[in-house]
Length: 237
Image 1 (tube, rainbow, N blue to C red):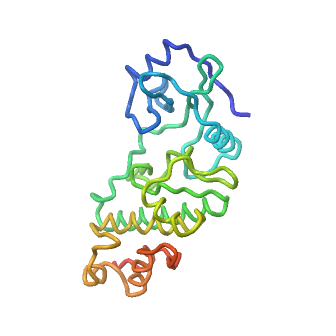
Image 2: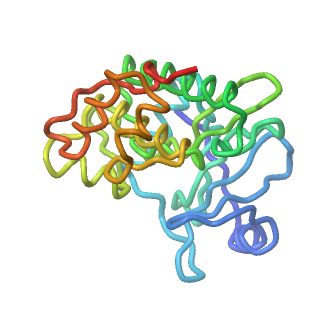
């Protein structure tokens, strides 16, 4: 089983008040006492809150199976015998991907590699729904990529906890399945080029993509008709 680290209430508040790196909608990322890990602590209205049991199960399984291309949980963190977060690996060479500012060659590498990683996740039964550059870490010097926010994946009978708006759109007409990967990756690809599923003109699309991509992009307007293809395969050089 995943190890657990018990902290005191004063230690918890010291972390969220003085070692906070950034705060999300449900948790805060904090520096640890080493340069190789960070804490994710669940915190609402100035009060520690229990980490949802569904997330605890996913973190425990990620610890056991050591999935590639992702940050790795190191231990859960508890306060008064209640799990309030976890510690995970961190690497100073990995930064949130600024995909819009990458040169074309690097951008195409990033999009191609993240597609391969999503296909690897699919082979494990993992569905990574929130495919956004803010959740993907990238080392431009080595090309290494890791996905973070892994506690919000769907994995077999463990569902996603929070559904981003695009995932909600997808889920209105079809179940969340492995084909969510190309759907979300396509949205990220279009955004990286300053394009949109609905408003991009055919001329704009043809300037970036070979013809087969146009049909796939058009199908995304109604997810029930989505062709389940990755458009990155049709990017022009």
